[in-house]
Length: 183
Ligand code: GDP
Image (cartoon, rainbow, N blue to C red; front, side, top):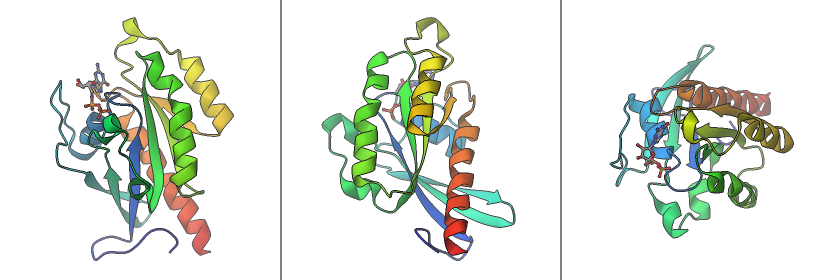
């Protein structure tokens, strides 16, 4: 099937990537999703570039391979190979840092430059538990998502709010897009 591949245990193997500025919570979103863990300050993914989780969609078993930048964005060192073969992306900003929202334009540009044109992109405003320090309103997130045609959710990796929903939406959509291609 287009863009995905098979392995022994599952029906499909999908690659998806996490992107966004440093310290928006990408690694913690992934560790929450993959292992239900949260880290207050240490990097959970030093030296680890991706995590897997198996998901059942209908009667199909999907293995989602989710790549984390593991801090490479700090050095602007994300290359086209990071995006290669990815069918989905979680584009993450931090609701308490306006700059991370403003930089989304740059990330979207990069996604369109290097990413698969059919890539499923979910916009994620993380750290919703820090409402008292909010710099980006829910409405700003919603209207950017509408403008760019993206699915949008605010999440908290810390409180485990909407994390599962964000990843599952992406994975289900990838499956939908991929199955249409095989018809
Ligand atoms: P990355 O650089 O984008 O991978 O970000 P990290 O996952 O390393 O997180 C950066 C910092 O933000 C760490 O101190 C995390 O503990 C913290 N953090 C991540 N997600 C949340 C969240 O949802 N709420 C709060 N309050 N802090 C978070």
